[in-house]
Length: 138
Image (tube, rainbow, N blue to C red; front, side, top):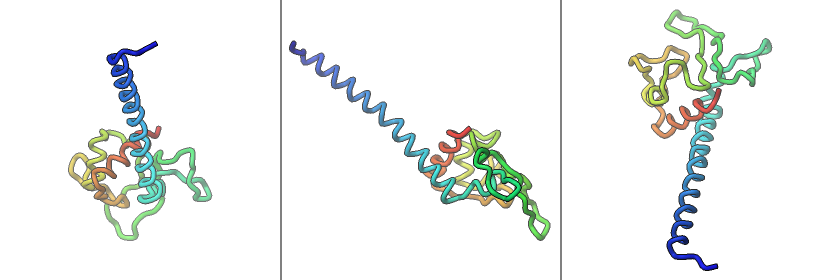
């Protein structure tokens, strides 16, 4: 059976479209993997945002679910007692607001985070990688 040039062109177009669709999830997976690396290996977000058991070990099943800070500064100063939940993104942040927070070190209202949270200045690419990773968690 011979194929018409039109049919061959349509098949080739469909194949190219299918390959392009498969590339999108791979790119998204790479973005999420980059965010996971930044969260877990560079910024060490779990040190504050993951609860600990009675022996001080992180509770893996509750990773990035928010936790009491557990320490206080020696001198009185503004200081957060709780590290908020990051998995799924912090409450009241859109993805764009959170990525901007990671780039500027300012909350949506323009204020800085309370210590011990540092005012990060991530690149746009890294801020979105972290945001996409945290958004992927539940």
